[in-house]
Every structure is written in structure tokens, then in C-alpha cells.
Image 1 (tube, rainbow, N blue to C red):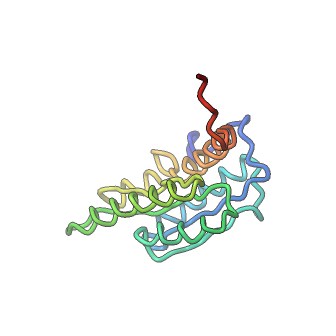
Image 2 (cartoon, helix red, strand yellow):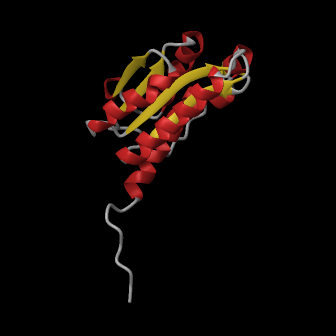
Length: 166
């Protein structure tokens, strides 16, 4: 791991937060590295192992469906979505990557729970591996840090809209 993957934001505690990880098993040689990075970040920020649960789904396209089921329970403070879509010779890449992003955003807006997009969309395996613990850091670690920041931000936002002054 490089320095970027191991840095800690000391003033950002995840103690007491419940985090769900959704990990695509397609391209598992990449997604398992993203998962390891996310788990390390959560541990570095005091999230207890028993407050983290991993849900494995077949591919990136299925991530939004799993996210919708998970968020319906309102049991999680954040959901981190991890996958890897690598460009191939057909237009399949465009469909999967755009629909995965759209689906995750749709669930995030409907649920009111932070959902973090940690799905790599790269031209080749080399680029994906560089972002899964290689020279570009670990985007799983970054996604977990984003989840913690979003939880803290959501807790600061009032539940009720203040009344306008007349």
C-alpha cells in the first residue's frame, strides 16, 4: 500500500456507525482488493468489525438492487458499493457502468442513507489494479472515507426545514 491508502483522518471517528459493503464478485481479483482497502479504512477510523457487514452480489449491475434491499431496513448508517467494470470489445461496458451509477444514485436519493459509489470503470485491468491498491491508491479505502464523511455530514443536517422569516 502507498501513503495515500494508509492515511488516517484522525478527527473523523466511525465509532458506533453501522456500515454495509456491497461487493461485486465479477472481477474479484480487483474487487477483493477494494474490499480490503475499505475494511482497513473503517478499522483505522474506529468502526468495529461487528458493525460492518459485506454483501456479495454477482456483478456491478446487481449492486443497486442489493442496495435497495439493504437500505429498506434503515439499519445502516451508510452503504459502500464496490465493483469493477472493465471495458471490453462490445458496448456492454457503457450499459453496465452507466446503469450501475444511475441505479446507485436512485437508491441514494430515495433512501436518505449515504450510498458511496466505489465502482471502478476502467479501460483495462492494469488501470483497475492501479486503483485497487496500486500507484493510484485504493479507491475502496477512499470510498470508505467518503462514507464516514457523509455520515457525519448527514448528522449535521437538520431533519426539518427551518421556517422562513417573514
